[in-house]
Image 1 (tube, one colour):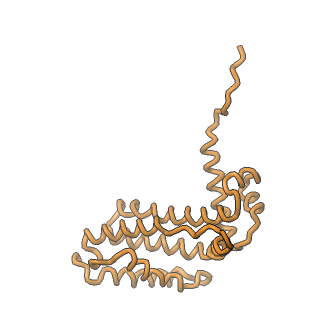
Image 2 (cartoon, one colour):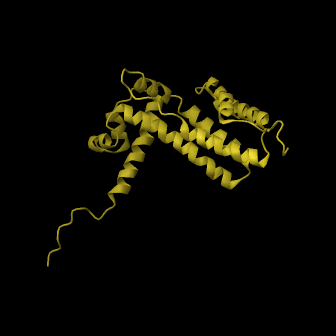
Image 3 (cartoon, one colour):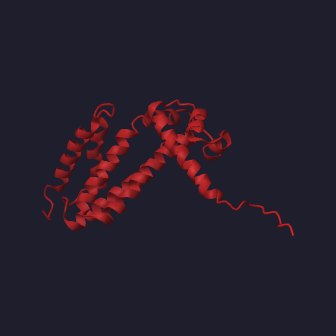
Length: 196
C-alpha cells in the first residue's frame, strides 16, 4: 500500500539552514573584511549557496553586514562565562581581553562596510555593543568579588581604557603590541587590588 505524501521532508531543514547561514557569515566576514563592497553574489557563490538561500537569510547588504558585526560581538560575549568557569577571574578577564582584541583587530576591515551601510540616509543604526558590555560587567564583578582588581572599576572605565586598541594598526604585526598593551591594562586593573 502506498505511503501518504508528507508535507515536510524527513531531513532536518533547520540544521541545514543554520549551516548555510553560518557558512554565509564566515565567507562574508572574510570577504567584507578585505573589501567593503564585495559583491553579494560572489559571497553566495563562495559560500556554496544559491541566491535564493542567500537572500532568504540576508535580504540586503545592510542586514548581512550588521549581522556579521552582531554575531561576532555575541561570540566574544559568550566566551566570558565559559572563561570564568574554567579559571581564576583575573585570568579569565585577561583571556577575554585577548579575545576582544582579536575580534577588534581581525574585523577592522569590516569597519568600512559598517560605515557604508549605516551612513546612508534612512540606514539602520550600528548595533550597540550591549553583549560586550554585559560580558565585561560579569568579568569585572567576579574580579571585584575575588579582590583581584582595584575596587570601583566600572564597565565604562574598562572600555575607555581599552579604546587604545583602536590606535593600533591592524595591518601591521599587531599581536605583540596588543599583548603588551593588554598586559599594561591588566597591571593597572590589578594595582590596588585588595586580594594582591
